[in-house]
Length: 143
Image 1 (tube, one colour):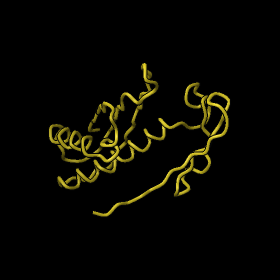
Image 2 (cartoon, one colour):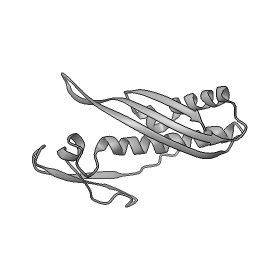
Image 3 (cartoon, helix red, strand yellow):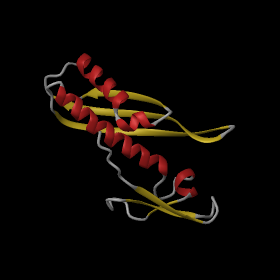
Image 4 (cartoon, helix red, strand yellow):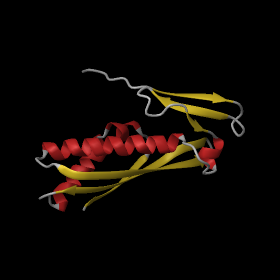
C-alpha cells in the first residue's frame, strides 16, 4: 500500500468572534483565503471549514463515481455533485451532523437500477465519505 499525503493549512489570530484566519492548500489552489466567525456563522464573504469539506466531498464522490462507472463499463458525459454540510450544536458543542450529496449524472445506456447500485456503493466507498462520523445522504439522478 502506498500512502499519498496532501496538505492543507490554516493560520488564526485573535479571539473567536473578532479574530480572523486564512486557509491555504499545498497546491496553491487556495492561498491565504480568509475565514472567520463571520464567514462561518454569519454568511459574510469568505470561506469556512464546512464549505471546504463540502467541496472536497463532492469532488471525491464525483471522481469515485467516475471510477465505479468505468469499472462497470460506462463513461459519464457529466457528473455534477453538491455536498450540503450540516453544522449542528448539542450539549458537547458544534459537530458536523450530516452531509447530503446531490449528484446529477449524464451517462448513456445505463438503467436507473444499475446506476443507483453503483452510486450507493460509491457513496459508501468514497474516501471522504469514509472519513466522516456523520450521516451521509445521497440523491443521485441520471439526467
